[in-house]
Length: 371
Image (cartoon, rainbow, N blue to C red; front, side):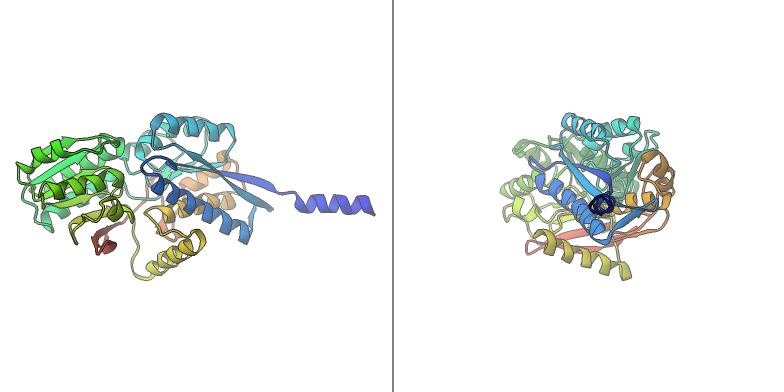
């Protein structure tokens, strides 16, 4: 009787473990963004475990293996290899294009699905890999739309561009220029910095002489904040336009109060409207209650990246990448908190939206959703 009970108990407790990796910069100047992504993924894992997930007729337990890439390509590839060696069944990440792209080869060689919630450089999904996916719009859409907006809506007559020379910053700046020029915008200067710089006086002084009414920055909020402070010191009153790396809840703090109402216009590579907005609002409230933090930018996209991977596993009846990857690639109409998710042949999000934002009284405020 005792032996039979022990066997029954052991059988009841036996569960397959499904390991999902997450990589983002949880140290360094944009750690707040990496942690935001990680918390979104962790929230999805916790909620799915609470509901119970059955794959191939067997209940499974999900585990999140989180790694820090510090936004550094070399550390990113090391983190990717560590996850491969740990035999993860899927990966959510990385955050930056500059880490996502080199890591993607490692996941591809291992045959492991990688869904980025935030990397927007077009190259990521254009390498011919069958393992790369993203749940946000890319820089062609994001940068190009911002370029046209700067001319058509902000009425920019003389536009300056600064980028941080990263895969993300250069990519989004190049697409911004194309978009602005396509509607007659005049680019009066293009300056360069790095993602670790803190002194921009020289490049800003050079641009000030060209009297720009719009300055576009391709880079992250940790650099944009000090740049905005120094623009104010130099008396530069140009509108400041940026991509999703700038478009964070933390930007006003990083600008140390030197942010005029309506001065900044930025875009998040995603967005919902109408009936779908309630799902996003509910997620934000749940996230705050669960983590104690406000959503920075891409936590909901990390959450959906986990969801779309798990949906493919459930539909395929297997968590082995070779079996569920073809199902993941055929994802059509997955209903996430960020909207409907369908992948094209490259693994890009079909019909991706953008949300334009500005800042008033130190708070991010939506302007509207564009497609």
